[in-house]
Image 1 (cartoon, helix red, strand yellow):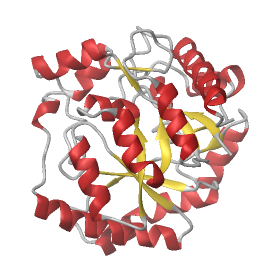
Image 2 (cartoon, rainbow, N blue to C red):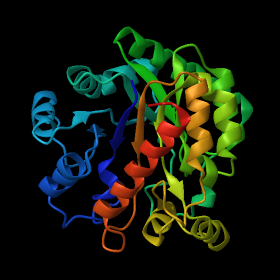
Image 3 (cartoon, rainbow, N blue to C red):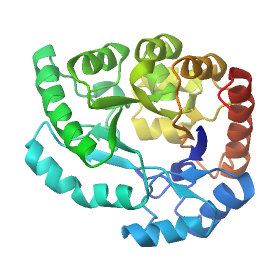
Image 4 (tube, rainbow, N blue to C red):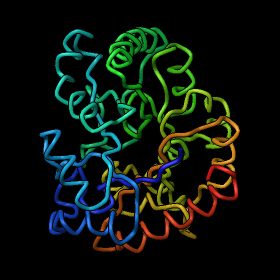
Length: 298
């Protein structure tokens, strides 16, 4: 069953916690749950770490806990150490009935560094990618045994950003490693979202409906902006925004053809002082529901 969710970074950013710091937590939850009507919300730095406290907080606003980002450091630590480090996060997901665990390798990532151009991101050689994928698959197998599916988040400023890197990771992993497909990061990373999603739809278990403003992402590349400069500058937006460059209708049809039945989540961080989260998230959800109905997903 398709469910629609959001991410609190639309209101209060995780990578730069000064963005949206003045917005009360209660406002985020009230707007997401009661006013806009999302089914669930992903993790954020405002939420309690205690699994039951988290469940109770979100339930008070009619929201389910979808899942949350987990930063692996498999390039620098063993699978056994990663499993031990992830235990509290895994427990939180299981207590809240989450089906997927969002994972991204961050041991050498630069997306959180406001002074580093996103163009200067780390890259792996083919041999390094193969070695990383083997460790990721072993970690994913552990999650499978815990009742969770690992969904890898390709992301700007990290070792899996370009379409070629997405392809390489998918080719070197399996059957326990799956994909979080993010339309915005795919496009920003130089990919054609329709082509990349078509290639990997059978392994997609989570979908981020992130849009980009092509005029801004082009400036990020050309002028050497950091990822966070891009965020504040308006690189990302929601489905339905006329400035957006991603056409979500065909993507949702691809998901339908692949019998996708997971979450569709709007993950679109913007500067809330410039772009009102309530208005943009309302637009995004209405657009996704309309397009999902047209695609036969709902």
